Image (cartoon, rainbow, N blue to C red):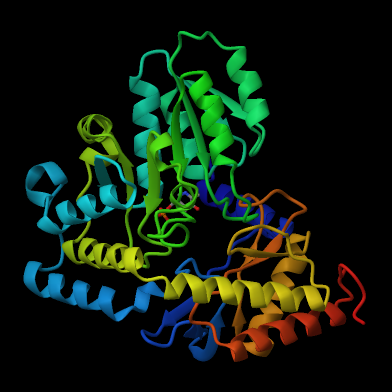
Length: 406
Ligand SMILES: *Cc1c(COP(=O)(O)O)cnc(C)c1O
């Protein structure tokens, strides 16, 4: 076989569809985020980042950075091993305690990323619990889907955020088989939020375990940043809460929080936990400082929510079509992959505004969009520049507006 030719042909197909991904090479500057420098063909340009998952700017917070510097200088660079073979650093232990406390669970277990935590925890639970059936929300993240697939357990997909559909499915199943209901709180592309209480009611009725991905909610919602389940007083109804340290907490890593027995089970049986080097101690220390800080501090959340309201309000005023949702994610809908990329390129070239176009397979075809994530560190001037630029390109391209500009 002509392997090279095969690779190139598949990539040409992707380009023809408008779905080929081009990475934007940026250099972030501590203290100046969302400002960054873009590198392109040997040149540099100033840009404002509008699509980061560093939702609260914790990636540059002095408390986080100081903790990382201290741990780096005291512990060195890497962990030096897997958790089992010399790699458990005291910073990992402290972070796990902090996370268990955050979610009011007995224990927590760290992984090298949120992706790995979902993959490892779901694949282990679904594979090792005899006869387990997994009920997965149809919009679950790739990391959950892959974990469930890898388990080879029976899987049923319920309609997105639809407890009635879940109930109907569970009612048709053998009541004696163990069941696991997997879903997210904030869905990152549409920004909609699951009806957690109703889903828990259905799960309880059928004796099913619940597994909740709070990746886009931890740090951001709830009085201590414990997520939507904390905000709604539901943490004790969820069997496993999963989160990331790489988004609102601004560092890197993933985790689950659950009972001591469940965490110990995953610790003992999950290949994706056992056979990989532990996170660098400085990373664990930085994440721990971020979690601690956001347990106490409301100012970042308040300022972020204020900026989300301002951006939404201003875009609505000029009729830019955003998807309405109750979260911090502002999806500007374009509906075409080529146009979404053109708009994104134009914003970058003419205004130094960086909003990555989101295309298939991240979102369904025909719902291509620009996903805007306002943060507490965007200024009012940043917001005005974004709104003016979007208004301009919408007029130039005669793109659909929700209503005419008055
Ligand atoms: C980003 C994401 C993950 C993975 O988290 P990482 O820490 O980035 O690996 C898991 N679940 C959802 C819903 C995500 O959006």
